[in-house]
Length: 540
Image (cartoon, rainbow, N blue to C red; front, side, top):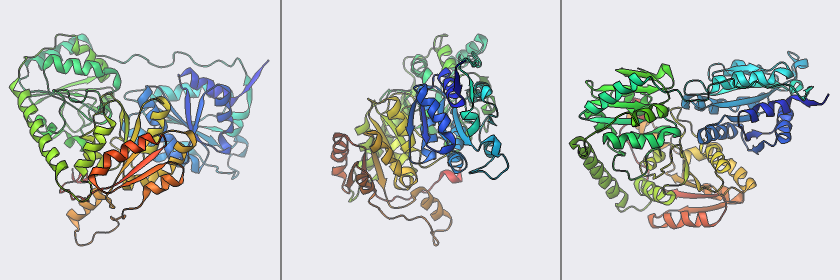
């Protein structure tokens, strides 16, 4: 009877889920896992920090709709993924973290990097366990994946002792089949009809798609908005679901729309700090909330219609169920006019004379450079918030932002996954200078793997978001808020990439073009003006 080792059985279980790539930083406790992936033709992408590997797995899941997988060695290798796992939990992304573990035979003997990893992850994952028997590897993967794809989705953790990975089982060892739901859940047709009736009767409707709205419903979102002639807003994972320049897509008027709306259709929306906890919506407005995750319904804001369904599938349902609206609508036209006025103000600010590059000028230039068909990872604070309003990306999910966890350092891992999944697309990263310091060393990974990812860094030399907040409370005692404008581009140059400094507005676009023409992993380091904001996410 032919035999295979546990690592190969694991790789077969991953292939059973459609996984074709595993992100990793190598280590002795995962050699069986990695060897199994090689034997089963699963691509291995290795990085310089386990956090980057786990973040790449999250972006892989977002971009493909499949399970994202990261394999890391025991002890510090596992603990280095904790922040990335938290980010995936907040974002509702199905990620499987595979941890190496000391051999079963060394349990409680003080073996190398001995640690009971699942205890660490029980507060940040949907499932965390140790696989104690080689023959049951497939069962454990199936159990973890069921949890990973439940509701909105989320991270799960399995560690596999080294001797469980390397022990042999029959080549014919079966794997579980058809062990989880694969069809997105819609709503009962009577519920759909009720929602359509409510929307059709509205005088001031607003559609808003957020973190829980995945790419599958993008066409239906546009169709529904057009059928109802309703102003539509997107944030978080739904960015890009509406084509840039569409007249119904709002960008700068969301608060105004919330304040005046009589009906709000919220599709996978989190009523958290990013959306004013739902309090910006008029108190008398009817809220229709649709989410795959039941616990999100009515969170911070009452839902008049609370519907547990996949938001994309639900949008497809209402788009073909008699949704209609007037060809001309004063409410919609007023918001479109307000968008025009706010955009003009932003353009004026971008065009204002400045010795250094102004944030609005930076955002506009970056948005125009990347255009509609790139994938852009955004990694930072204020500079990302500014740039996001200028991005023109028109494919759902192709603006890769960290989500509500607000994690810095996601850019390299997210961009790595994007270039792995879509090697022919232009992939970029928008960095804040603070964010670059977290995982910028993974430019070495880009160089080693020959990935011409284009980074552009807004460098004001401070932790601007925090400095603004600190100044609001203790202006006379600012501390730990200044970084200085460091030559980050030279780090990329030293690793074999392309680096360039931009200190004048007119040099921004030519520098971005030169970065792309280099054919190398690139970083354009842009000196921007420091700005003070009189409000902060921290204050709600």
